[in-house]
Length: 219
Image 1: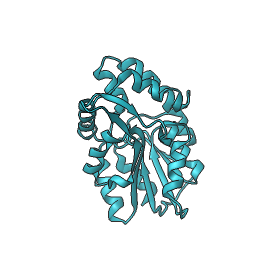
Image 2: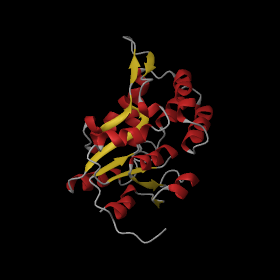
Image 3: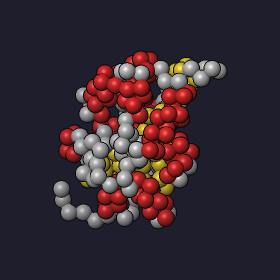
Image 4: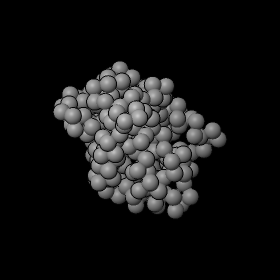
């Protein structure tokens, strides 16, 4: 890559799965019900840009049908397997006065406890809502969520950056590259998964393993 100077981004957005945490939440929920291999293949296909997200999103959840207990379980797993340096990175960016957002195609209720752990306000967490019946069984998810569809991360980036200030997206997957459509710089994080499409198309790329490596491009 070309030589660079770290940019003064006002808004810093992070993907969650395989970025802030080392897990893919949907895949872990699938393993819990004996569908791990099948779901992992679908997730990999989406994150590598081989199939559109909307082609598999409902299919995965309809098969897994995560109940409230499962969401609580995977929420703790996100925290237990947090990416090295994630907390320190978020704290440093907030110390500098930057607005930190989480933008994820994952399930919002599972991600919020990790956001609490990192000190990211709930209103700056953008993910897909999951719904439960009164007994805690799975009811469905927000089919209207932009983040369950291709192009959703670009849409969210535009919404949270109405003043068009310098913005950066940090993530590991094809969907994170969508932020470029909203004028954001994309830093590919390969500390958990180094995907060829992201290595090729991200503005910058770091192989990690600590998320603190991205500070080199931001601060």
